[in-house]
Every structure is written in C-alpha cells, then in structure tokens.
Amino acid sequence: MSQLYFYTLRDVRVEGDVQFPGLFPKLYSHLDDHDLTLDDLFNYNQSVQPSSQKKWFEGMMMDPGSSLNQSKYIHKEDIPKLIGLNLSYFDETNMKKKEYERFIEHLLKAHTTMEYGLYFGARKANSEKEFMDSMNIANPRDKSQTLVYYTNIEKLLDHVDEMREKLHLKSRLLYFNMGWNYGVRDENSAVYTGENRYDFICKMRSFSNEELEMSETVCQIPLPVELFNFTFRNLSHNTFKGGRKKTKKKKKSLKEKHKLQKNRNEAKKYIDDFVNGKGKLPRLTQIKKFTTKLGGIEVKTLDEVIVHTITEHWLVMHPSKLNDFITNIID
Image 1 (cartoon, rainbow, N blue to C red):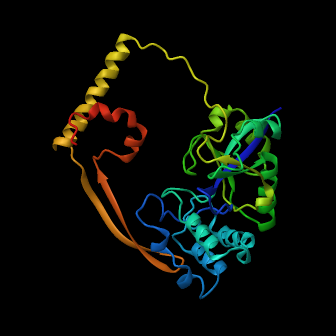
Image 2: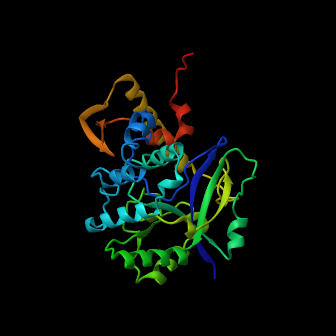
Image 3: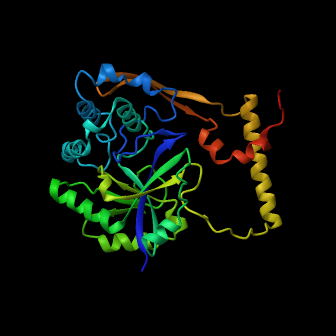
C-alpha cells in the first residue's frame, strides 16, 4: 500500500542570498501585494534592541489583528498556549540582525484572507526513495534553491496528537482541503480529530497525485524542523517531474463552436463598453481608513470596495484572451 507524504517549500537561497526557512505560521498580510517594504514597517534598532527578539515576536502574535487571533477555527483559550509553543521553538541566540529581519518579513507575507497555519502539499509514493525520485532535485551549484521539508503522514499525525494532549488543546489542528482555499474550510474539507485517523488517511489516499497537487493540508501549530527530512529543489523548476497527464482534445461540435463564439462576443462587448464608458461602470461603494498595530507600531492602511470592475483575478486567469479585446495599439 502506498504511503502519504506531506511537504512544504521554503525559499532558502535566491540568487545566492540565503532566506529565512523556518516553520512558523505567517501572521500579517502587510507585505502581500502592496507597495510597502519591510523598511516601512520595521526598524530593528528602534523596535527590537530596547527589548528582545523574542518579546517583539510575542507582541506580534498577541496583537488582536494577527492571523492567530483572527482565526475562525482556533479556540480563544488555545491562543496563549499556541503563543507559548511558538516561543518554545524560537531561539533568538541563533538569529543575527539580518536573519531576524528575514524572519519578520516572512511573518508579514500572509495572504489577506489566509487562515493561520502551515500549508502542506501531499503526495503518494510506495517508499521514501520513490518520493525522492519523483522530485526535481537541485544541483548544489544552483544559485536559487528551494528547501523542501517532507515527512510521512503518520509521523505528522503522531506529533499533532501529542501536542493536543500535552497542551490540552480544544482546537482541531489539522485539516485537508481538496482545492487551494487559503485555509478556508468547506463542505468537502476533512478535519482530523484524533479519533478519525484511518478515515482521514483513506480519504486522502483516494485522490490521485495530480489531484493532491492542487490540494492543501493546513496545520495550525508551529512545527519543529526535526520532524522533517529535507532536500533542495531548483527555484525555477516544478517540485515534481512530469505533471498532469495530457488528454486528447475533443473536437468541438458546430453548436459548441457557436456557443463559444457567442460568449466571446459578449465578453468583447462588455469590455468595449467598459473602455468607452457605457453600461455599468466601476463604482466606489465604500472606503475606509483604519490603523492597525504591528508589534506595537501603528500602521495606517486603506480598505476600498469597488463594484462593476474587471478584476485582477480575471486578468490572471485569462491572460491568453487579452489580445482578443485589443483593437487599438498605441506605441
């Protein structure tokens, strides 16, 4: 019977520059797709030196705006225990100033809707050797490498059970989503309770590796690196060799072609109207300025709600269709 492996990626070397590779969940989205930089939010000499690295980290976790405190699934009474667990894995004596700045940068790079936790991919293999053979291992001379932490499912579930019992935690600390939901559970999510180990593993085993590649498993506690084996992947390569199997394209019927052309014409008309100021135009319905605290420092931010707009999501998902809507090219 095949084994299940969990893996997670950490950018450890980018163009020869070593990055922070720890296993602590992210806390804020201040550096996610914004114009802000770490220097705008954090100054080591002003923030850390008056106290300590550990105190500053603790303050970030305790802040009401952190993803830990905002979690939908973690019981409030468990939060102080999880803060203590994070601090127990944090060793400030091993962090120089530059390393600590990378650590803070990691904590600030959550997605805006991201649930608190560590995110893992999953893969089936008959042995650890087969799992390793399926991966694109980096050449030691590659300037840009990704650190791949991996462990088998039994080992991770044993550790989660141990932490729940040791800390008397009420929260369900591990769950599986079939799609990439940034940790949001849905009706198809499988939540590990400690009593359903067999069913939880069987459900994950029921999916192919191609399907598991699109999934996420979220662990809502920090983890010790000793729990994992590791290897390196070239930053520019896919994690695993091959990929989804190519399927033979089915020839479209005349009816399907007419429907596709109709949809394209409607989409083109919508965008033409949008460009020419016709129809439903973008409308700002809400704008809100607010201040949030980041480890004791107040950070001002702006929240806007705009309806009837062409979203960045559409542009990302359909880049190949953009040329269909360009009628004038200006040099």
